Length: 188
Image 1 (spheres, helix red, strand yellow):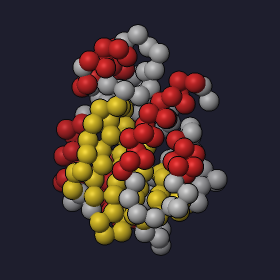
Image 2 (image 1 turned 90 degrees about the vertical axis):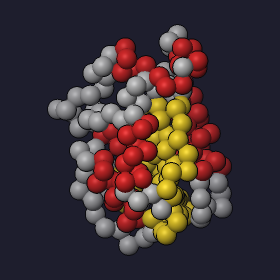
Image 3 (image 1 turned 30 degrees about the vertical axis):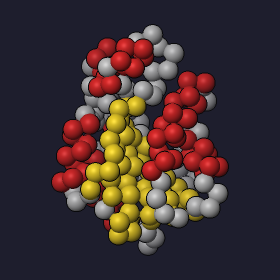
Image 4 (image 1 turned 180 degrees about the horizontal axis):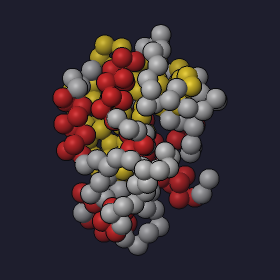
């Protein structure tokens, strides 16, 4: 893993870690990067579970074909997932079925008004390759989706992740709306 990815994961960790709630945490899509290890190491009293399409995950599930899980969780972390899915709204609904009453959903995803899309509007959107991004979101879109699906918005912000060491990153430090990543925290 490159130094830039590690810096980006540490930055997202600083946002996500402060919003964890309860003892049972489900980390969806945790197979890539160091974010999961950072969160687990910083929270030894919490029990973490992973959900991914990887055989290493506690729950191996294709996120476009939701499978019931008998467990419920206090917090779900869905970092950099929604942009890969065929139906992100179905995914948000699926998360509701996995959360305890009053549970929390923490989402991060690339910002559709971020620098990466301003520089290259087709950035990372390649429909023939499932691993590519098939969706792009603005912060207002995500707020609307979570509210319409019955969540209560707790926090939203723009994160200056991923374009670490790019000279254009300094512009996004001044203009928040063009930061490359978004975070949404919402409770049931």
